[in-house]
Amino acid sequence: MTRIAIIGGTGLTALSGLEITGHDPLGSNFGEPSGPLTRGKLSGREILFLPRHGYEHTIPPHKVNYRANISVLKNAGAEYIIAVNAVGGITEAMQAGVIAIPDQIIDYTWSREHTFFDGGEHGVEHIDFTEPYCEQLRTSLVAAGRGAGIDVLDYGTYAAMQGPRLETPAEINRLDRDGCHIVGMTGMPEASLARELGLCYASVSVVANMAAGRGEGEITMQEIEHNLQSGMARVRRLLESVIPTL
Ligand code: HPA
Picture 1 (tube, rainbow, N blue to C red):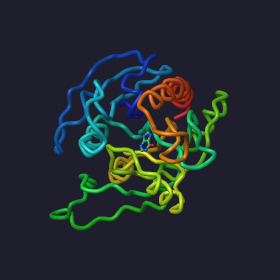
Picture 2: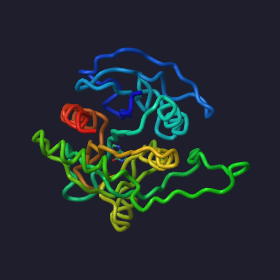
Picture 3: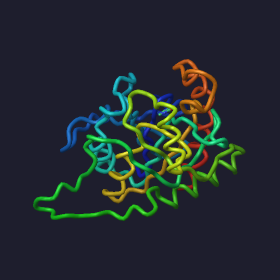
Picture 4: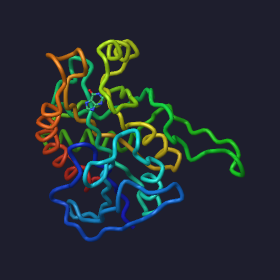
């Protein structure tokens, strides 16, 4: 079975270099995932690929069916999930183009279907989330990046915001006071759902822009897309380097 899955974010709806072997149009008990799972080979290993926002980038962050996505990956045999997330940089170190492997999360999202544990016949269950990302996978990502000469920051508190609008500078100041380093819209509930199903999940967060009020003027989609293009080239190399080590 294929053990490694990649969830692509904005800027990574297709994985170039992936030798595609098939598409599985899987459904789940939780509705439709973002698209059919792509099966393929990367660095000689079979992997699964799913673009979070759909193959045509049509599903906004608050409409992603996170439960269906995680559920179909689990059912397809995934044990590791590498999530790629575009983020805004809040702190000085998180400049556009930086790749961070975050180690903490604060969840500010609301009204998303955020758990598989809805009580009833299964009773009440609580996952431990002291380390919200899988430490083994984080360590492998950092080591693979450094081995391949790709700069990666091995920390980051990820602020998961509801979106789809970007933040106000006042909101970013609050996230900064809360101890957040980066801000995105898709990190939760994906990470906790993966934990609920016992999957080893980590994020490769690519800084697409300085967060609101931290850079010059307004944040434009052109700026985001431009920075993601060069960032994603390094993300692809990082993925190719880490896969053989898992
Ligand atoms: N805020 C939230 N999500 C984002 C940003 C941002 O500035 N950039 C890319 N995703």
